[in-house]
Image (cartoon, rainbow, N blue to C red):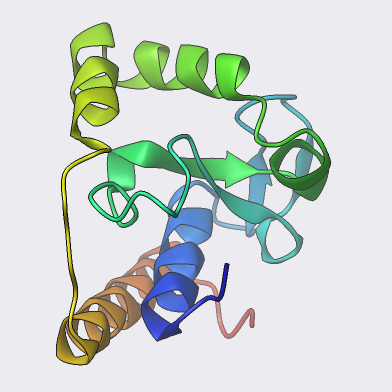
Amino acid sequence: MKRNPADIQFSYFIRLRDSNDDGIGQCCTCKKYGQVKYMDNGHYIGRQHQATRYSEKNCSLQCKKCNGLEEGFKVEHRRYLVELYSEKTVLLLESSKRQTTKRSANDVKLIADYYKKETAKLLKEKGIIKWW
C-alpha cells in the first residue's frame, strides 16, 4: 500500500512518541529495544482500514521483523493495547474499522501538517536534535 505524506508524518510521530529521550524504543510485541528511526509504526488494525488508519490508539512502535515478517503479531499487539488502554478501547477500534471514511487530498495535507508539528514538539520536549 502506497504511503502518502500523512502516513509518513504520522509514522514519525508514533515512533517518537513511543521512544525515550535518546530515541530508543521497545517493540510492543517482541519487547526488543532499538533506535526508533530504524523501527516501524505498527498498526494493530491495518492501514487499509481508513477509519483507524490515523488513530493514535491503533498504532504502536514495532520492530521491522514483527511488523513486516510476522505480519504485526496481531494477538500480541492486541494484548499490548488492552494493557495500555483497555479492552473497551480495543473493542471500539475493532468495531470502527469498517466505517466508511474518505479523505480528500486536502484532508491528507492537514493530517500531515498536524503530525509534522506534533513531531517537532516531541523532538523539542525530548531534546532530540534532528534524527531523520
